[in-house]
Length: 126
Image (spheres, rainbow, N blue to C red):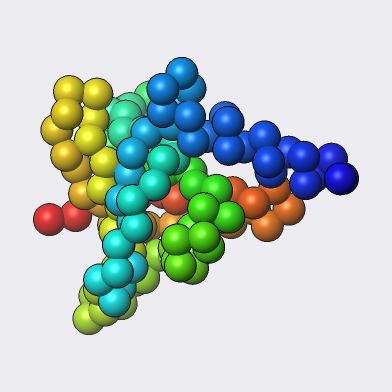
């Protein structure tokens, strides 16, 4: 087994362990309305960096990182940002630490096909 293959296998314990690790339940919904519940890394923070000044500013930065093999095993493809407002976007829903559910639209998708992770930048969705 190559080092890359071993690293992808190790991701299961790192990314999808919700008991003793950082894994957190998320639900992905594709534009056709098909949903998949899985464990991933997610976050929703209220500070970001202003690209013009380099200073911290108040804002919302939500993200989710998912093992591609878990998406494929669940019958999903790789989520992508859809800028066409006439089409339904990919959606990601997860609870915050207080149990409040938040739903986000996938704004940007960055798949790492070498390691098997897709990082999603999310924005609020109503």
